[in-house]
Length: 592
Image (cartoon, rainbow, N blue to C red; front, top):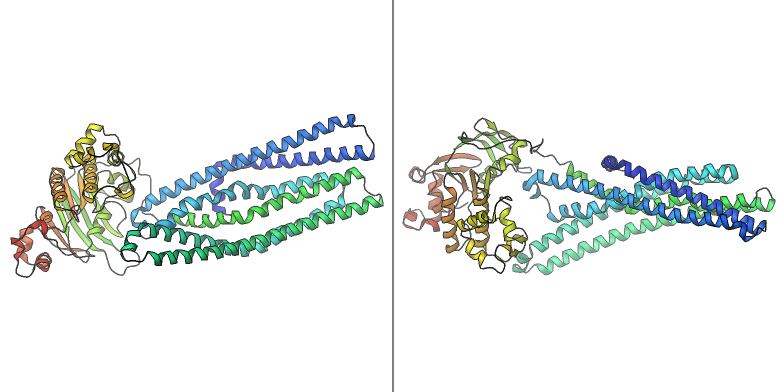
């Protein structure tokens, strides 16, 4: 049960691991000295009738050896845990970076609970494997060899018994280990399923209550928990059998050594001090392999977790190369944003999200994307945000191609306002400063005023230092949108991208947001997924998408006059008589 990938991670701390093994060997050497001092004391006290005063020096050395063994063991444990800590820290850092590189599009296809379980519990389960199992592999081979060096000159018969019986123990461990590996893998998979499902249930608890399905989900969790209990008990059963076989073999081996020593003592062919010294070393000879066996099953869980960790790390990502050194800015010379023959298809789907898409967005232009569900609106946004790369084609700003390596640098030039912005648990000020960590309090408050958020923030108990819950718990939908809009003012980037930020808001909040957006849009390039006629009609140009292609474009009045898909979408909402002209444009939504 040796993972080459984990060993590769240990390279950076191999000096600590070597020191851990070295201290373990030192502990084995001290154990040999203990046996030597104790055998000499017993021999001289009981067979040679030596006075107690003559044994004082040996007693002192024995106590020193006992203390030294405890100290060496403690330092070895500390170093082993440090090795595990550094490797876990490195793996967790790699995993978090990888998840950030994979981006939100990958995570949408994964269960949040399962990924969280891998990042947290999965990496933590590596501790036993790294801190105990790996060093013990070396010690289980080196310490018996060292003991043999001292046993052979004193009793070659016992040395032969050691050499014959020792290989049997790892052999039986491997036989049982094959079965244990299957059990451990099933146990880890069940635990991941339980973690994923439980988090899903917690996140969707309100929906379950509305549909009166919470009790059913309790039954599902109970069923998965019961399955986990069974797999755990099955794994423990194998572990207990393994421990029984291990203890039985080592005990029998030690007993065989004792019998042969006893027979030769009776025959007078072996000196008592040598016999007692070798007998004391017999348990020490088998101890490292026994310790390896006790760590085997706990370490197996770490290996199973490592498989999933490296599976995530091996996920292909389009963001290759170092982005921190990339200098990419949208300066005054920036004029056009191009999509050239862009093709994209989501895995597992049979249709093209974008099919040979060509479009140009000019600097300072306000552009709306409209079209039915699946037309490609969100795909365009995700491609521009760098959350994924097109399968074919190019996206570029003037002559600068937006390659995957530029994704992080490019996102610094974009402000994105989704329908449901995410606020983190923390203070309102912390959530605002995410857009500009270097901003002053005055700049932060000015941005909040522009977004219409300053007044309600000041009315809260602690003002800008008020702590809000996850996803903005404690705030209304309109308040969340205003805080998100304040972040947009703080970032002040040249390209604004929106996914109908006024959707699902009450009229008063919608009025505030619309007023703030007008300020935000000034001198900016704007790209918006729009459904409300009030938002669409004030755009410079409307792009009508269908089946991944731009099938029509132009101002609102021209598209209505052409009576194409755009006109059809309007009349589908309000009727074929065209009376949408007589209605409040804010209240008219294009079907999607």
